[in-house]
Image (cartoon, rainbow, N blue to C red; front, side, top):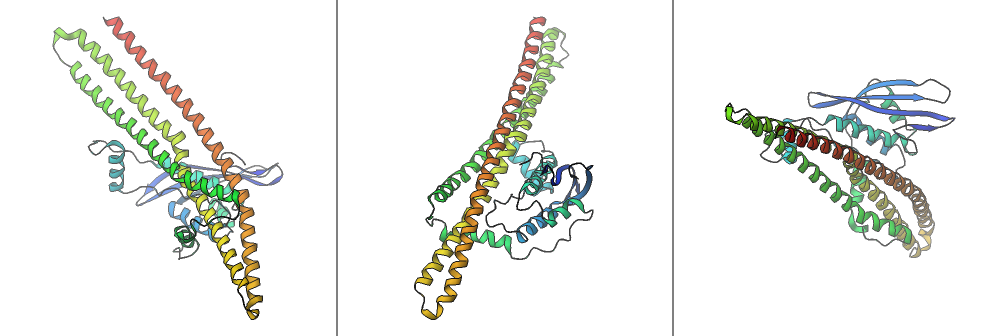
Amino acid sequence: MAENGVIGESGHGPFWAIKVVDASKDGEFVKFTIQTNIGTEGDSEKGVVVLRQYEDLEWLYHCLIAHNNVDGVVIPPLPPKPLTSVSAAEARSKKQLGKDARHMVADEFLRDCRNFEKFLQLVILHPAFSKDEDLQKFLQEENPPVRAKVKKGVIESLSRSVSDFRHHNHKDVDEEFQNKRDFVEQYTPLAKETYGNFVKMVHSQQRVALAVNDFSAAVMTCSANDDDRSKEMKGNLATFASSLNGIKESLDVMSTNDDNTLGFTLELYSRYMEAAREMLFRRTCRLVEFENATKALEKAKPKNQEALQKAKDDAETAFKTISEDSKKELVRFNNQRVLSLQSSLIQYAESRLKNGRDTYAILAKLLNSLKKSS
């Protein structure tokens, strides 16, 4: 597997390096600028820049599923749709900063760019999609794909199969797969809970930063008192207010870094685990079909045996195929998940250490200033 959305082995086909470099609001839509560098070993790279919106990504997702065999694939999840309305922005601000917050959270198009980019990187790196023509056109052709209304089909059938709990607790014939199913069933809600709690922590840090900012403003107001008898106190208050501003900035940086490192990966895999769950459930459905076909053949009358034998053979082939594909896919997916979480945890810890040192420097400077003025 390559890093940063680069695919292509030495001497084997092209490599793709994908970056979503910018996003801008165009009415109710957000336009994303996608830069793709394509090349082969020994040749110069070819750079392509295209504009796409979220609806183009939805259509690409539909085409990828409709035109490829995804039974045994953990399909990379679509990123959340960007918020563009004022009411949505207000609701997000209240959720993050509290109902009484007087501030609005800025548009998170940088986060949307990263989500958009990560999805494309995961898709182009996946063996099931890396050579897909729709994907290559999406990345290279100037005009966006002609989006047709997504009819009831593959996407909805996948959702239906996952919501069909008739086979949800069906016991697996393979103990190894049963263990995998049990793990995913337990891990998926825990991944969502972990991300939810992490978000609450980041939001709390943002609220503390706002409170520190208000406190700093109040201290500055006190330091502006024209009473000559309190000149020394005014100087100390001004120094204190300045340090509070520094702490507020430090908290802002910490919240941003937390969200961009561990938060980003936790959010991604809280959605990605659902895709793993769906893939395993598709295999369970194939197992049920095979077992039902076997039972039907055992009870078949002589005149129906040939047709039912074929149905049983087809179901068995389909089940064996998805089992083999699923086994390989889960190894690939779990390696990717562990490496991603490991990398983001390291980045999270390093950013926290740096932030702690910066905050310490601010407080040390405050203490020295107060000592000098006393």
